[in-house]
Each structure stands twice: as C-alpha cells, then as structure tokens.
Image 1 (cartoon, one colour):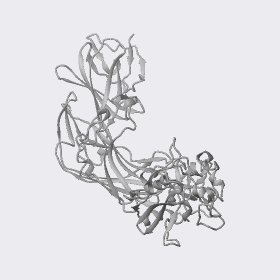
Image 2 (image 1 turned 180 degrees about the horizontal axis):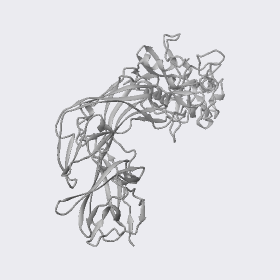
Image 3 (image 1 turned 90 degrees about the vertical axis):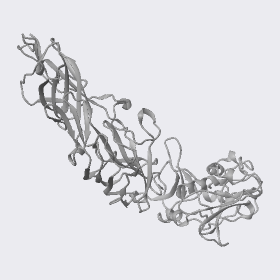
Image 4 (image 1 turned 180 degrees about the vertical axis):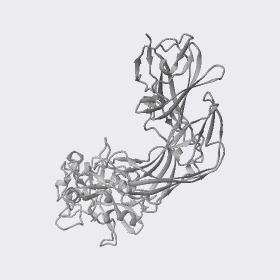
Length: 572
C-alpha cells in the first residue's frame, strides 16, 4: 500500500511526520489527496543588508554609510548612521534561505492553469513542527496537473480572490509578513514534495547604541512622529501571490519604550571592548520613508551620563527608502571622552571603574596586535623634587652629547618620534655611553625620574610596563586623544613652534581622576616639560611649555640650559 505523508511545515533539513496507512493517497479517478500525499517544505528567505542611501554602490548592493554628529549636551557626542545590517544573516548574506521558518499560523492553497483556486490546508508552525488545524483533512488535486502553490502567514489577509498586507501601528512593528509561491506538478507517486521559499514582505531595523568598555545600562528606545506620502502601507497581490498594487499614505508612528539588550555582559579588559545594545527588530512596510520619524532614548545611562530624553535625527535618512527583505541598523555610536588606565592593567571610564583605581589617561588604545599608551596623572618626583636638570650634579658629559641613536631635524620630523620607551630603557639606543638612561640618575636625571615613577596605588596589572620619558610624538598622542595637535613651526626656526589647546578640557581629564593638570605656571612664569627626542644638532632637544592659557609652545635648546618637569608615559 502507498504511504500517506502527513502534511507538515518543514525546515530545510527535515521531513516531518511521515506515517503509513492502508488508504491510498491516489483515487481511482486520478485525484491525489494533497493533504496526505504531498510533503510541504518551508524555508525562510534570508534578509539581506539594506541599501542605505543614494551614494556610490558598494559590495553586495549596499551603499556607503552616511553619518551625522549629535552633541548630547553632557560631554558626550554621538555619531549616528543608518547602516546595512549584517547580523543574523544566512551565509554570505546573498539571499540563501534559512534553515528554520518563523513560528506562526500558515495557509496553503493551489491555483490551477485556468486560474481557479483550490483551497488547501491551514496550521500552526511551532519550533519547526507543523500542526494542522483540522486533523485528517482531505484536499484533492489532479495528479499530473501543474499548480501554482501559495503559502502565507497570518500577517497577510486572504480574501479568496487575492491577498492583501496592511501595515498598521503598533501591531506592524512585530509582523514578519511572508508569502511563498512555487509552481509544481502533482505526482501520482508517493514522496511528492512541494518546496516553498517564504519571502519577507517587510523591511526591518534594529536600533542600536554602540559603546566602548561598557554597555548602555537600562536602555529603552522610543519612536514617534507621523509620516506622509503615498505608495506604502497597503500591498495587494493577485490570487497567485504576485504583487499588483501598493497604496496607503499617512501613518502615525508611536510605540515604545522598547527595551534594548546588550550583546554581552561587561568585563574589564586592557583592550577597548565594543558593546552593542539593541532593540529587537522593528518591521516596516516596503517603500516606507523614515525621514519624518523621531527617535528618543526613553532611558539609559552610559559612561555615567544619562541618555534619557536625548533626541536623535532622521535627516540622514532623506535619501533612504526601505526595501522589503532588507535589514538595517540605526546605529548610535558614542565614544567616551576620556579613557583611563587602571592599576590592574584594564581600561575604562571613571563612572565604570568599580573597585579599580586610575593610574593614567589613555592616549593610544591597545589592540590585539599593538600595545596601548597612557600618560601619568601626576609629575614624577625624586626625593620630593620635581624640577630636574639633565644631570645631577650639573655638568655631566651626557649634557653635551648626542645620546639617541636617531635624531630629528625639526618639529615636523620630531613629532613622528614615539620612541620614548626606547630612549629611556634600551642601552643599545644610547651611542654616547651605552647605558640604560633610566638607571643612571647622575647623568640622565629626567629619564631616571620617569623610569622610577610610582603611582599613588600599587600596580597589579602584569601588562603595565615601565614608565618612560615621552618623546615629542608621545606628547602628540596625548593632545590628539584629548584635544588637538596642530603645531605651526616657526618659519625661520622650524625646531620651535606653537599650537592652541583647550586647557580646561585637557586638564579636566587629569583632575577628575585625582591627578594634576598640565602646564601650570612655574617659577619662570611658565612650566617646562622634558621630552626624550633629540634634534640633529648636538645637545639640542625639543621641550614643551605654556606661556598663556590657550597656547602651548614647542621650543628647542641645549640640554644644559633647561630645568623642567617630567610627566611619565607607559605602555600597556
């Protein structure tokens, strides 16, 4: 006897609920009981990354990402962008079907060559298992005849002569409307299979806060506003599932707050971890314009600052019309204004320090392949003294010699010198007397002071290296990280120059952590900082000093003419 194949909604790798019976699925008149003689296989079309603007096309049909900067008014700045979504895609994100079909209620019917509809079966899919509404249902089709089979989920309305999908708020945000259409000739033999690819009729967006070293805590997102226009919201299809019209217009938008969830728990790390705190997917109809929507953080705290009631723009979406089966991310990227190195070798913000104690301000982030760099919160001292001549006592031969294996011509050249650690700790880099300068207080006092700097708390992080006297390029890293580095060399003497700085902003990074600001006025009306860079002219080196509240000077002088302070740096 022929086997009866129980109708099931199937994943792409399984055939479900095959069973046997004494009853044949083929009648003497050639009709086939499709409800028992055909196995229906349902797979779900993969979403693909969305096209985000009308710019130059990129890989796989995406577009260049457009961004907009938003000042959040609390010391934080957000970079907002609408981006192609590449998460949760099938392999290569090229339209490959997904193994599992979404849970829900499905309807299957067939249309013959004369456009006559043959009502079929309905049932519920749960975790890949299909349960028909009517047990033992019969559905007869002609064996050997070709039909257009149509499968819809309940987000799509079946009116008997056609289909319609109507998007409405707020239900629509959770509706993953799908239609599957396939042409198949019904077989007179057992094990007949009709395969559907269920195609999404909506686009989808995730709203996401991207942050660093910590996730956004207690985050909720709200969407409001109204959208006017034509040609979206209602989509009509003929009885075979072919789209025939798109209509609709004004749509009031109001839903939320939507809870946002971080992609992983916070952990302390020496490398800046990225966190993505996102809403679930929100669905929108095909051809929907986003430009009139208003996005607001209903709640959330990041880096110790509240994001509640912060409003984000949609102007960057003016050139974007959503496309069905495309996936997008509305990304709110917020970087901390200052990162700190803590005593355990990890990095983060003061608001998220927990039991950690800061020992420096990060000027260069650590990566998986490159070490990070931080500057000490305070100046170095030796036996209570923090003003140093090049040698102690004054007059060592090192004051009048070239002591670095590489020298630099001027500011433009010297600002590339980030070898402060090398000049401080590597004997091979010292052509004068081939000693480690950090270990020679008498001949290299500033180097010794930097190398023997001790923070206010014991350092437990094994990745925190030796403190060193910064080169000119190390100082450049500091100002690039906290403010700006735009030195203008003197046209007649390019070894010296000036650049502006925001004294309040830069010094707040140090004082907020219990440190001391830079360039306070010293005994000469200004404060000098040593660097470890040497110019090509023997005895000459660049140093930094401030002569006014908003200007920093880089000057050059013979080493034996200067008394200055030491602000140590460290790699981690």
